[in-house]
Length: 396
Image (cartoon, rainbow, N blue to C red; front, side, top):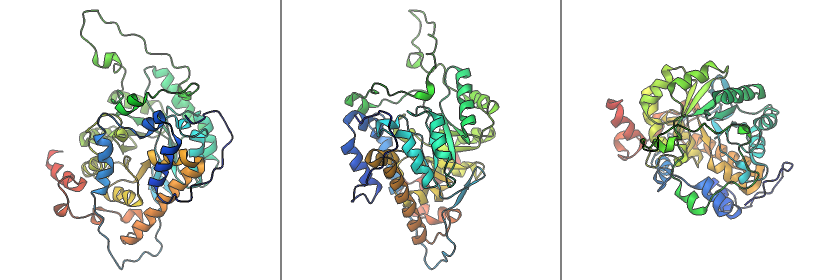
């Protein structure tokens, strides 16, 4: 396991042959032991959704246009009233000090330096205040958001939200797709356990939930009662009433849930299947994005994660209706490869590839990305996001 003791931010050289995100994945595999690799790279059960996330982006065909003016072209976009240098944010990933001693601090430095947004996990291995201090110091930074799991102790949750507000976080991202952990076979086979000293430091002081009364001969509770305290739509409203920050929901895959979220006035949605780590055989995020974008018709800003590995994937996400994408595993692979330098390199590669893809498709700005960039549905595979969205229109 990588040494996780506290240390100053390290400067590490990049491997000379790291020219794509896949190269960082290869080097990360060399640097992480089997349990840590299983934790970061594995998915739920047979990992069908994990693989589908990637193949869904590959299955979309870009339709280039030629001789279009690219003068004044740029990657800037607007999200929650802010102008972003580009539509790429770092997704919330727990326990980043498993990948590198600098952990979330390194990710924050890299994201801020590259103008990327960052979403810090509730289960970060670095205090939220420390990450905010690192990130907010850079004038060219993107937005800083805090990902939240509602805890069984609502007073503790409220105090955690207040800490995030005081530290300068600009939005809350409520994860709603994990009332229980997925059956992560790869982690169990590898014997994954958090090493000594590795904790979700922002949850320090949270008491365990009280035991649920149950007669010896009574019915077995779902997941042994662990889901008794999971949030509902009422809790979304509770959170909105206890924060001044905009609230986004992460983990929405069904158009009807998206419409209900819009009716509650949330600030945005992150279309996500938790990186394939919760419900196996759930739809690929690209498939769900197309359906949700069609259902909402622009009522809410949409972001998407899951399987993003190339700048062409970012452009396809924009064409399907996303305002931005979130990058999870590739950033962790960069972190494991070369700390902050590795994360920055991953972001730089993706930004450069996005610019190339835009230029080669005749798309001068992110705002010009639309379904017209993608192969028409009638020529698409029956399993493509466009075909599925069109087929589902009558069932929304």
